[in-house]
Image (cartoon, rainbow, N blue to C red; front, side, top):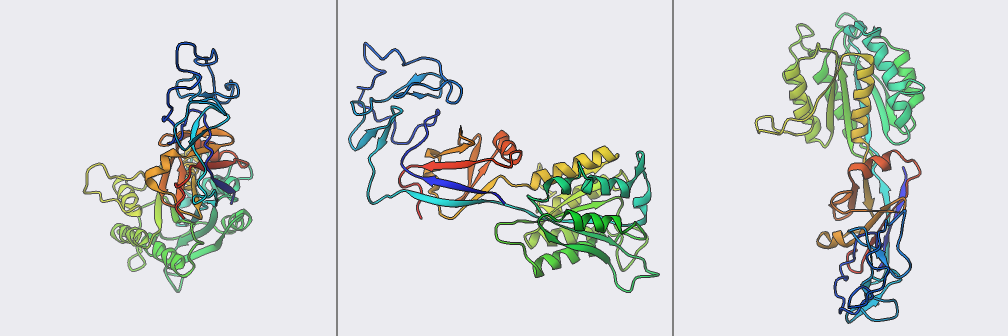
Length: 385
């Protein structure tokens, strides 16, 4: 887990994002009047081509200054910064606040179909071998590449009524960070066989999550990978366990656990995939426009890509704060990623009073940089406790 600092202070960065106090100039700044400073209006870029001292790069890509440091331009109870921005004077009753933040690390239980059909041909290999490679390949496996950012556990599920004393048969390893070695051993030491009691198996994982909940701020998630329609412990054949599997997915969501489904081959019907996807995230399929995405793969390359997409989607760009932000004023803050100012509403947003989230390209950049540095600066009064 990476840690970041949320810097609460009166000084806002000025790469095109002005403080709420700005705009109160009394009309005597260096860029107004009949003889403005020649720097005013010069083309600029906040990073590559910054303005000279005393000026900031405005949103239109030109240099500007509301005021002159130590001179005129600001209103009452304001001071001119070194970048030519009017800001409120420091209030002794509103001191600087520094809040610790921490990146959200999801807890993901891989629930993998171990039924006999997983030995079926799948491109130039079989479904099981493709699954093993997609998860734990030494170079490209999704667990290999994200084990430091995701708390992974893995469970294989099946049932053989002629052998097993209990149903379902679950073989797994506990959830942990950096869990690649244990998950690779689990997959390599087991082979597909017998039936697909999907709903019963989901219930086992939900019970385990409830008995062993994740750490605070670590959302619990099930990624279900299956290559066929489900059956049940009560009736292994035929495969008529769709309603039970959907009910189990709904139960998972009711208990705060999201479920994502990946169909390994086209043997899993589209209607069932859609129903499971909706149930897994609490969507109502009866309401227009609420269908959740489901995932399918018909080749080893597609399987690897879909797993990467699912895991990438649950990796979080949320930053948890140890204090609260006033939602009505949050847009006055300046969030920076590696020193570059981000735009509120386009690059970052407030999730709730103590959580911010990077979005769009900013989120992609954060996830792709193990040494990323995020800071957020807010004016007096925005940090409320």
